[in-house]
Image (cartoon, rainbow, N blue to C red):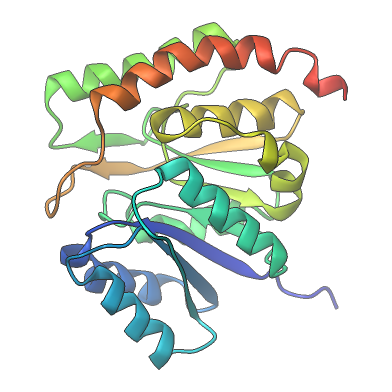
Length: 243
């Protein structure tokens, strides 16, 4: 009999205490055979202490990578991915802590990983969408995905979303040591590299509500980086699929 896949959810955190209890409660209700790894960038609002309590109270289900300060979203996920690979997880999901990525979609993401190399929780396929967003944010988000799709030539509807699932074999194929982007562009680079290597994916619809607790980590600097780096991705990865 084939062994059941080892599943892990990676959640970067920085001052998310207002969301933590609700997040963990919702995850535990919808997936009971999954471990959670938090990558905390030295939160000072109680988040770090809450996670440490989880790790100590439920040994074997919750884990933490504690970092000395804010080192960026991309580096947090890369640290989590490397940890997942070194601990022999086969199915890995990435999600934010602010509950904009609703845990109710996790079972579908993990199920799809049985068939596809990576899975995109997509706001921009039929059945997906956003809630309580300003028109400016809607325009920015859709425009970012359209911009990346046009420049990179890959027909993904939601290039910039961060609620995704990966097979361990896909992360190994991508080559995590070569991923250079952070923030907004990190999501684009991961998906583009995966598609560039011929990995098979599916976009499953999700509804993405605006966060109700805490502050968004998005900044003008992150957006500017994405605009510039999309072009560098196009030229840097040309021909990599033949390697």
